[in-house]
Image (cartoon, rainbow over all chains, first blue to last red; front, top):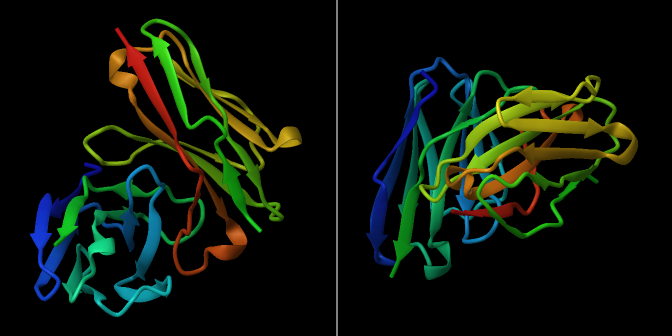
Length: 114
Length: 118
């Protein structure tokens, strides 16, 4: 089973709202990732969790707050977002943290900030 | 610095035609990995293949084949007898061993949108 699930599929939120995106994998993968993808662009890495610890933060604004409650779950908490944050948010996981490991992606959450 | 270039932003073919998607990369590492991903309209990136820098053997998987040439820093992807279901955005990505101690940081190309018409 190479499935990564993400909820919700779509989310519309106002700039004052607080919401969370959820990602889950049951492949025993030890690294999990959040990406942001704007239309007609490649995914941009936001955060990496390695063995449930935040290992990489690509200078993401503090209105995005990641959380890894356990080895299977990854959350992205959203607060006071801007319209330019509207994008497809993708979660991925890989078996290990090295450069040889392919990443498996979820279907994404399409976020619209109004 | 690492870089991946996919010069073809969009390609349109008619079903059953063969099509090649180009990928050129730049890296100073001697150990690196190259990947291809497919992103259909549904949004999910689907892993297709991984190649390491020491293995230049070409690979074939059904209608898909990959040609890796270190001499030209290219990792091209060919779809034989294309089908409508092949319509998607295809990304080539590079991962360098020296950058990836805490997570596999992929450098993506800009993507090639392939449209296969019936």
